[in-house]
Length: 140
Image 1: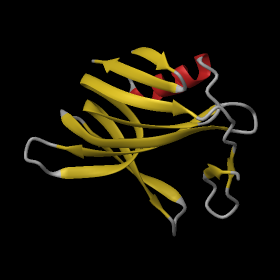
Image 2 (image 1 turned 120 degrees about the vertical axis):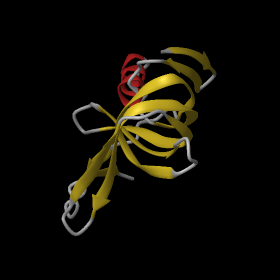
Image 3 (image 1 turned 90 degrees about the vertical axis):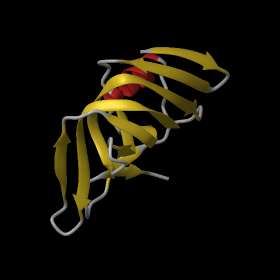
Protein backbone atom coordinates (compact mmCIF):
# COMPACT_ATOMS: atom_id res chain seq x y z
CA UNK A 1 0.00 0.00 0.00
CA UNK A 2 1.10 3.51 -0.79
CA UNK A 3 -0.56 6.77 0.20
CA UNK A 4 -0.25 10.49 -0.13
CA UNK A 5 -1.68 13.00 2.34
CA UNK A 6 -3.32 16.13 0.91
CA UNK A 7 -4.57 18.40 3.71
CA UNK A 8 -6.91 16.14 5.72
CA UNK A 9 -7.37 13.63 2.91
CA UNK A 10 -5.44 10.46 2.13
CA UNK A 11 -5.15 9.17 -1.42
CA UNK A 12 -4.42 5.44 -1.10
CA UNK A 13 -3.29 2.90 -3.68
CA UNK A 14 -3.36 -0.73 -2.66
CA UNK A 15 -1.51 -3.35 -4.66
CA UNK A 16 -2.06 -7.02 -5.45
CA UNK A 17 -2.04 -9.09 -2.27
CA UNK A 18 -2.86 -6.25 0.15
CA UNK A 19 -5.64 -7.03 2.63
CA UNK A 20 -8.02 -4.08 2.29
CA UNK A 21 -9.37 -3.91 5.85
CA UNK A 22 -6.00 -4.59 7.51
CA UNK A 23 -4.25 -1.93 5.41
CA UNK A 24 -6.83 0.75 6.23
CA UNK A 25 -6.58 -0.18 9.91
CA UNK A 26 -2.75 0.03 9.85
CA UNK A 27 -2.86 3.40 8.10
CA UNK A 28 -5.25 4.80 10.72
CA UNK A 29 -3.01 3.50 13.50
CA UNK A 30 0.22 4.88 12.02
CA UNK A 31 -1.31 8.26 11.05
CA UNK A 32 -3.31 8.52 14.31
CA UNK A 33 -6.61 8.91 12.47
CA UNK A 34 -9.27 8.87 15.17
CA UNK A 35 -12.33 9.42 12.99
CA UNK A 36 -13.00 9.46 9.28
CA UNK A 37 -14.70 8.00 6.28
CA UNK A 38 -13.61 6.49 2.98
CA UNK A 39 -14.72 5.39 -0.46
CA UNK A 40 -13.01 3.38 -3.17
CA UNK A 41 -12.95 1.23 -6.28
CA UNK A 42 -10.68 -1.52 -7.59
CA UNK A 43 -10.45 -5.29 -7.90
CA UNK A 44 -10.43 -7.91 -5.17
CA UNK A 45 -10.46 -11.68 -4.55
CA UNK A 46 -10.51 -14.04 -1.54
CA UNK A 47 -13.37 -12.09 0.01
CA UNK A 48 -15.24 -12.72 3.25
CA UNK A 49 -18.60 -10.91 3.28
CA UNK A 50 -21.16 -10.66 6.03
CA UNK A 51 -24.86 -10.02 6.42
CA UNK A 52 -26.10 -9.25 9.93
CA UNK A 53 -29.09 -11.32 11.02
CA UNK A 54 -30.95 -9.08 13.49
CA UNK A 55 -33.08 -11.92 14.89
CA UNK A 56 -30.11 -14.19 15.66
CA UNK A 57 -27.81 -11.20 16.39
CA UNK A 58 -24.94 -12.74 14.42
CA UNK A 59 -23.27 -12.21 11.08
CA UNK A 60 -23.94 -14.80 8.41
CA UNK A 61 -20.78 -14.96 6.29
CA UNK A 62 -19.85 -16.03 2.80
CA UNK A 63 -16.36 -16.66 1.39
CA UNK A 64 -15.82 -15.94 -2.30
CA UNK A 65 -12.68 -17.08 -4.12
CA UNK A 66 -12.79 -15.36 -7.49
CA UNK A 67 -11.76 -12.16 -9.21
CA UNK A 68 -14.33 -9.40 -8.58
CA UNK A 69 -14.57 -5.70 -9.44
CA UNK A 70 -15.18 -3.33 -6.53
CA UNK A 71 -18.07 -1.24 -7.84
CA UNK A 72 -18.49 0.57 -4.52
CA UNK A 73 -16.62 0.63 -1.22
CA UNK A 74 -17.81 2.87 1.61
CA UNK A 75 -16.87 2.91 5.25
CA UNK A 76 -15.98 4.80 8.36
CA UNK A 77 -13.24 4.73 10.96
CA UNK A 78 -13.62 5.23 14.69
CA UNK A 79 -12.03 4.23 17.96
CA UNK A 80 -13.19 1.89 20.68
CA UNK A 81 -12.98 3.02 24.31
CA UNK A 82 -9.62 1.22 24.64
CA UNK A 83 -8.23 3.27 21.72
CA UNK A 84 -8.24 0.49 19.12
CA UNK A 85 -9.11 1.43 15.54
CA UNK A 86 -12.44 0.07 14.30
CA UNK A 87 -13.04 0.06 10.54
CA UNK A 88 -16.64 -0.51 9.44
CA UNK A 89 -17.17 -0.90 5.71
CA UNK A 90 -19.58 -2.23 3.13
CA UNK A 91 -18.70 -3.29 -0.38
CA UNK A 92 -20.53 -4.02 -3.62
CA UNK A 93 -18.82 -6.37 -6.07
CA UNK A 94 -19.42 -7.46 -9.66
CA UNK A 95 -18.38 -10.75 -11.28
CA UNK A 96 -17.60 -11.49 -14.94
CA UNK A 97 -21.31 -12.03 -15.68
CA UNK A 98 -22.21 -8.63 -14.16
CA UNK A 99 -23.85 -10.25 -11.14
CA UNK A 100 -23.70 -8.11 -8.01
CA UNK A 101 -23.00 -9.24 -4.46
CA UNK A 102 -22.33 -7.11 -1.41
CA UNK A 103 -22.33 -6.75 2.33
CA UNK A 104 -20.05 -6.07 5.25
CA UNK A 105 -16.43 -6.66 4.24
CA UNK A 106 -14.53 -8.66 6.85
CA UNK A 107 -11.50 -9.33 4.65
CA UNK A 108 -10.43 -9.29 1.06
CA UNK A 109 -7.20 -9.48 -0.90
CA UNK A 110 -6.60 -6.95 -3.64
CA UNK A 111 -6.24 -8.80 -6.96
CA UNK A 112 -5.05 -5.93 -9.20
CA UNK A 113 -5.21 -2.59 -7.41
CA UNK A 114 -7.56 -0.44 -5.34
CA UNK A 115 -7.85 3.33 -5.21
CA UNK A 116 -9.27 4.67 -1.98
CA UNK A 117 -9.90 8.19 -0.72
CA UNK A 118 -9.99 8.59 3.07
CA UNK A 119 -10.94 11.80 4.90
CA UNK A 120 -9.54 12.38 8.39
CA UNK A 121 -12.19 14.34 10.30
CA UNK A 122 -9.62 15.57 12.81
CA UNK A 123 -11.73 14.48 15.77
CA UNK A 124 -12.36 11.17 17.46
CA UNK A 125 -15.42 9.18 16.53
CA UNK A 126 -15.98 6.89 19.48
CA UNK A 127 -17.69 3.57 18.94
CA UNK A 128 -19.34 1.58 21.69
CA UNK A 129 -21.25 -1.66 21.92
CA UNK A 130 -24.99 -1.52 21.41
CA UNK A 131 -26.68 -3.47 24.24
CA UNK A 132 -29.35 -5.02 22.00
CA UNK A 133 -27.31 -6.15 18.99
CA UNK A 134 -23.81 -6.33 20.51
CA UNK A 135 -22.35 -4.36 17.58
CA UNK A 136 -20.11 -1.31 17.90
CA UNK A 137 -21.93 1.81 16.72
CA UNK A 138 -20.98 5.48 16.73
CA UNK A 139 -21.41 7.11 20.13
CA UNK A 140 -22.63 10.67 19.50
